[in-house]
Image (cartoon, rainbow, N blue to C red; front, side, top):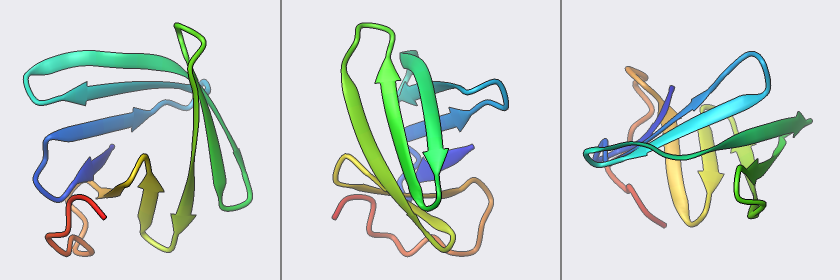
Length: 81
């Protein structure tokens, strides 16, 4: 589970290549598939919208947000870049 510092956005990257993203109280706000190649992640949501992100150590940069593994010590309070 990857989360923003404020916990508002939570993104679960499932082992079967699917993701499930919650925003605030809205569970499964976005769902779709993802593919990782090196440090890059590419998303295709179930409506056909595409997005990408980059892993940088313990951080995931995606959509202008910085995500950290849930429970990780790397949270820096930045939430959005």
